[in-house]
Image 1 (cartoon, rainbow, N blue to C red):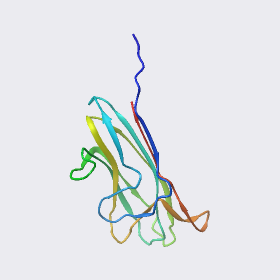
Image 2 (image 1 turned 180 degrees about the vertical axis):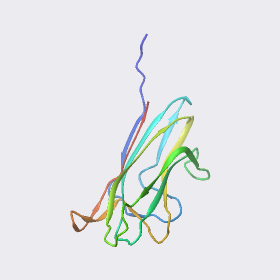
Image 3 (image 1 turned 90 degrees about the vertical axis):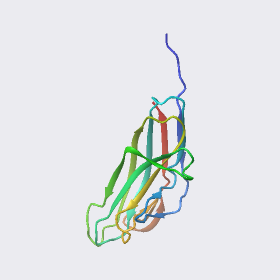
Image 4 (image 1 turned 120 degrees about the vertical axis):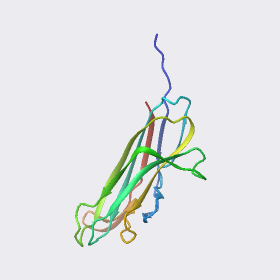
Length: 158
């Protein structure tokens, strides 16, 4: 016997977000938050969030830590880090003309969620003197020409 089960799919795109300067304390990444409802703890979700991260010229390498959090009260009073759902991003050089901009895709498999949960990405810089910017590039195609990158979120049940 076979049956078709409807699976949950969430897609959102943040249009024309403001640039975010990332300090050395955890900050929610604009466009990364969504609500997941699971009736079964064995349900797995794929979480994929694409955004731009960059830093204008710097004489030092910069590092950013990114992690996925969950909450049952929409982050009003409680937030919990999802085990294993974190990573670091670093610049690849340390010259004064390093205008580094890169697309970054967070990709995680989330399991053991039951009921209604909210999930979001948060990030922090390792130094408050080197604050990367999200969603905006000041240098486009080799010249000063600010551009906004619209981050997108896709979450689907497997």
